[in-house]
Length: 114
Ligand SMILES: [Zn+2]
Image 1 (cartoon, helix red, strand yellow):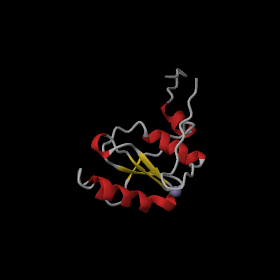
Image 2 (cartoon, rainbow, N blue to C red):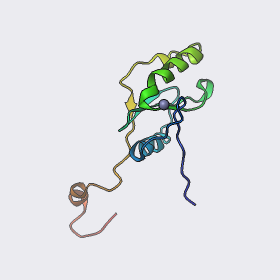
Image 3 (tube, rainbow, N blue to C red):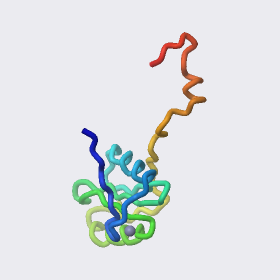
Image 4 (cartoon, rainbow, N blue to C red):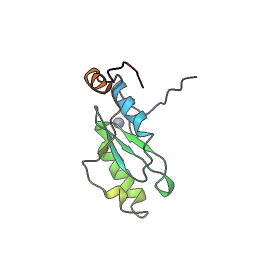
């Protein structure tokens, strides 16, 4: 049964557009501790949290500064991670369809597919 993950901005309850939703879903696979991640294309900001850094948190482009301020206020005693400055890591989603030119380049001439 397919599951849809609902992301919301911590500050205004906004939801991401479809492409940013894919970025945010892809970021869930990253096992990072106390890191900021940029979520293109709508410039959302993710805080991965974990452990003493609390839960993952998300902010829309308008509220990125509010998220970093909140984290620096509440988690700066845990470690320097909330003070990290951008540009942050990006984990853009893989292309939804394979690039046909790349697929052609790696497909063996025998026609076998892997
Ligand atoms: Zn917001």
